Image 1: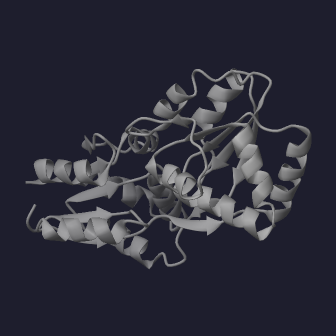
Image 2: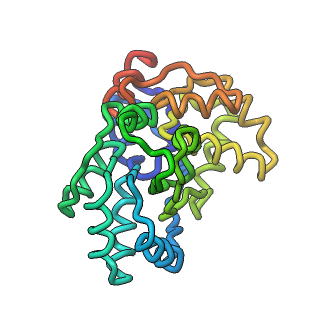
Length: 265
């Protein structure tokens, strides 16, 4: 990998990934394509908790650590933590991965249904197979965007869904790194691009479209090797017409780095 120039669009773990790539002898170009923007509505949460007095949910689904903690923090600010805890104790609690599980355990919240590695929606739905949800309220902690696959599957089983938005994904305030990424692609100065979430390519193309540089972006990505963290990210790239040269399995940073070393050496 020595001397290879690799674009990274990861935000939260972007610096960590950049360090790993640097240690491998490559040159990272870090251009975060996502920002977590608080999106919780205290009034909506109040109304939801009020409604639960009449009709408690049967199932709570926690998808991310950030969103799980945000819900607990907002409930604490409203002075209704005890009520939320009672609802969680009364219903079933499902998690999609180690991050929401860690937050739940830190607050002594029982976990009834756990997804298996690699913790995608497929594994989450498999964990929920034995739960009868027809005619029942199911609460989904939304991450940066709605999980359409999960919602569709649960609605087809007759569930009444309640989505709790706590944060949303948006472009970073500082988009200068994204402009530099487009410049580098246009000048053929990159060897590879690494995508670690489905929202990154969507945001990147949205930004390029606003800058009237979408054609240049497509042409640039055709010239480089494109790597994906996992199947959900790969599907998002394919939907945008972007080829994927390699997909990490399981979808984690360690296997992703192994993939980069294998394909770029």
